[in-house]
Length: 138
Image 1 (cartoon, rainbow, N blue to C red):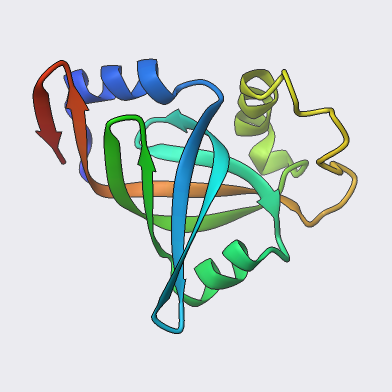
Image 2: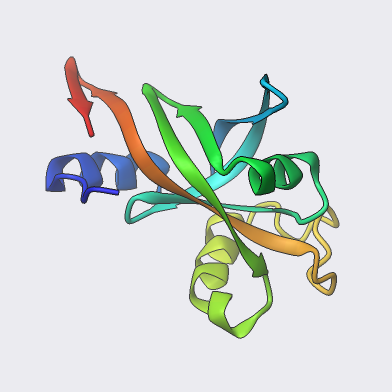
């Protein structure tokens, strides 16, 4: 992905650098599937806690090209399974996700002892961001 301009990066961090609900679309056998997910944005990517055996991850394994949409924002990206939430390599982003999702992360929905609880990274490849009457394309 190309590096976002400082202005776009600032807007993205302000708007999505916290617990944010976005629509995430995958495709399977030429049929689109869309679901809402809680996501956290940082440095050109969204991070999502999910389950490795979910349909979205199976679909991403077959075709990593995805689409997302949020508040006055739409983009394409590449879905990357970062693996188990608790593995050492994921420590830094996992801590940020724990903080961003603090209101609900320990409500019993996630099992952090299960190695199928993973982090999905969506690296943005292109998109459109609207802010105060200005259209930004990247």
